Length: 389
Image 1 (spheres, rainbow, N blue to C red):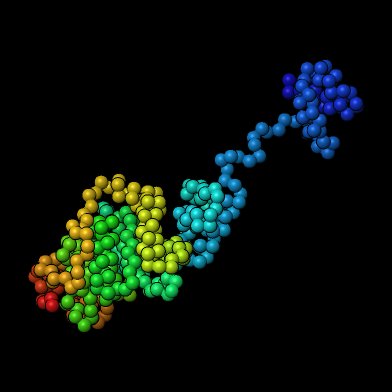
Image 2: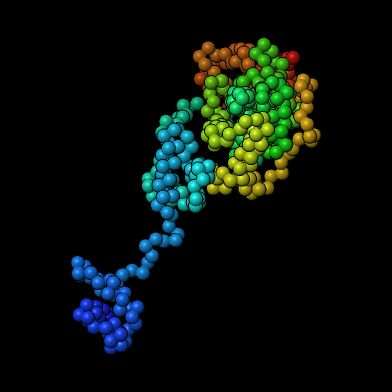
């Protein structure tokens, strides 16, 4: 049957080429003029198989990503990678949005393009643990632990110098941003209070050893504004080891994303622009950015799935500096003990037992007992009187 149809096509074209009228050919073969003209047009002396059936599959699939979009994805990914910036599917999608690319592919499509072009390898050179046990904080549920840091100084047009208090929930990766023109005591209180009103009050907050967080090296036992704010609200501050910013790795990574996707993209000429833009970026991140640690969910979807009831500040405005000295509560200082067997707590040094050498210890200040208790793993190995001032 198939061979007979092919011979019919050849015969029809031969008769047309010999000068026979299309009407005569079509009548004798029982075919339409459209059929005849199709095969006359298809005829090619240089193609011995011109009369064969061809696939009816369209040359371009409506579901296939346009080649231009694929090239843009590859270009952006390589550009981000070469700049040592975040270069996953979400970062690429945000970059395409900022460039006004249309149509925008889905994150799933971008991941397929990256896999198809072998662009999924991770950057080398990441921190390798040394084997010394480090006291990790719980991060299974929302607001068990926050990580916080100040970014800055940064500059608006003018120039106007500002800082950004960035906070990230370790369980859901929800962020809270609060820009400020300074890192003075009241600005610290205002920043944490405003962020807590949006993302909730944590059980713990992990920070570095900046004086804006702990207070003053001249008065190491004075409990700075943040320590007092935390203890008055049932939050335990945890200070990471000095010169080890990777211990706050979640907020450090977020800060890079903040600088890349916000400071590097959004033009701001006033404090009002900064405030509005920071809140918009916070909302965009929390509602749209997807994390592998959340199994592809966004921070807000992870929060909803947890069914955890959050705790928020009871009053609208932040308390005023100086706050009263708390009478209860605890705060913690994590340190790696060197060979000199000295523990540094905001500039004040204490002798520690030999078994703590080259180990991470936790110095817990118990406000009610006025004691500094030293823990190696979960075992208390030393205790000092610690009268707070």
